[in-house]
Amino acid sequence: MSDFLTSLVAVVAVLGFMILIHEFGHYAVAKWLGVRVEQFAIGFGKRLVGFRRGETDYRINAIPLGGYVKMSGENPMDERSDDPREFMNHSRWHRFLIAIAGPTMNILLAIVLLTTVYMVHYEYPAVYDEAPVIGWVTKGTPAAKAGFQIGDRITRVDGVENPTWEQVDLKQALSPGQPLVVEVERNGQTLEKTVVPEAMGLDQIGYAGWTPKEDTVTITDLQENMPAEKAGLKEGDKIVALDGKPVPALASMVESLEVSKDKPITLTVLRNGQQKTFTVQPVLTEKRYRIGIGTMQMKVKTLPFAAALDLSLHENRQNALLILELVKKMAQRKISMQSIEGPIRIGQAAGEAARRKGWTPLMGLTAAISLNLGIFNLLPIPILDGGVILFLLIEGLMRRDISLNIKERVYQFAFVFLVLFAVMVIYNDLKKTIPGLADRLP
Image (tube, rainbow, N blue to C red; front, side, top):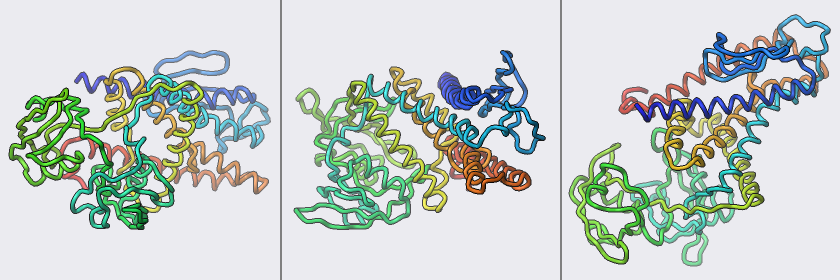
């Protein structure tokens, strides 16, 4: 129950803050441009608490699923007056600035938060600093079928020259069931291969089957009450051999466990310069045999302000492009809608971040959510800010307003679409969250 409460408090705090920042953007620009703001609300439905200052009612409503800023005369279906402080009586340029202010605040917040995190605790996988050299290819995977080999250096993936492992991972994740052209360097020769990553896991993201080369396979994470911990293994142990055979990568261990299944294995590790041997009994969890270790080595740095800001701008730009690519591929039905995370999964992630040591994990997650919220609201879907901007651009080109009847029909369709989208996202969240539910539901 404590984990549930932590997740609940964390997600309410994070999403509440995101909504507050977003709506404040609309509010501040509307006030600046002289538009009358009647309500500044967090949530929808019945008013629970709040206060009135001047002409604005600041309130928290009963349904905590977003927020809004209600401006006088903003509904195009309402009867218009000559009041210069009504939203529709302002120029299209003013209405554009008000509409784009909310998403802009979310994007700026993501940049500020990530800059702050990088100045304190910039943590990333160590392999991202290394050349993308393949250390292991799992048997029967798309990479194995395509002919990739240990030692291949990836020099191009989907048009990206000299990619990092981070770029390689993103390209394969976004290409489930889609051909991915990869160029590798092998023994001084350049070879071009096409791999079709398979959709894996509840999120149905692409998986090719290759693993980065590691100088040493070092235990960096031990799961509680799992065989490795019970056998006496410790974080920092360097795995030398499994049943007397060298271990070039964690993936090779996973492959061996699928063969040996629940038979006890012998692990030889190097600890403080001394070689030790442990007998471990694998267990079947999540449909595969595991011993409960992780070997992802991380690097941690603190960056000066200029470098942190530059990296934050770069990461947010890359992540924004990634979000747009994800939306594009979902529209083309090249990637599953199950890859979208909803409020339940966001709550789980927020809870996990809140339970981790320090405040930077939760701040980093908040930055990611803020960027996603900003980009999502800029999509050209009526009702969203992007839809308002689209209408304004079309009316600007036409030099006249779009028919109210057309707008009403479009808004009705958009409302139904967003409701169905929300239902689908929550449905996917439930399938991913409740054990065994994914096997019983379509």
